[in-house]
Image 1 (spheres, helix red, strand yellow):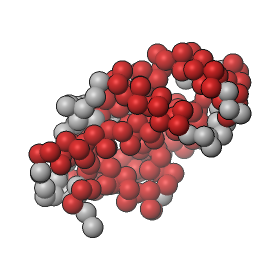
Image 2: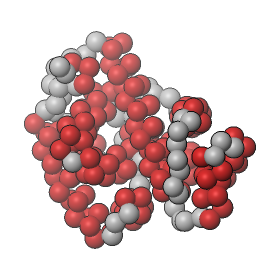
Image 3: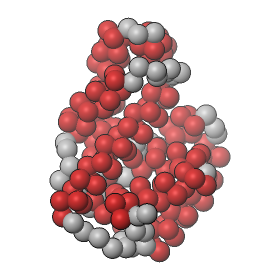
Length: 195
């Protein structure tokens, strides 16, 4: 993701209510958005929607936001990753409800990897439960996991979106990844069964 003045201009025009700017932005960034959706797809349930369907859902949800004040390209992709996370988690909940699974799930972070696994619905929900707990403790660290796990951003891209140095991002990722690993291995009650 490289900074791009034209993209920033389109984001500002979209913020001011220009729907044509939103369409032009999506056309301009389609390949990157599709790649982001592909990563979210791999992190989501294997039975979930394909990347193109995720892009369409993302477009609908983003354009429905009337109060978005886009700062720059990094901000746009950060919001897009959050929405993709919600879509993937909603799909996992739906699939899990269909299967009526329950109980504590023990999952290894190594099993999930950083990026690129068709996760089972229970795994997606376990990661989401951990993220919700982490958001209460440290919203910044939860954002880091969201950008790395659901958006598949590199450490450099994550540092750019978070507005911090790569070294700080690497340190935070190391600590956060250790915490997430311990939480997942302890076993997390899936979200649809939590109080």
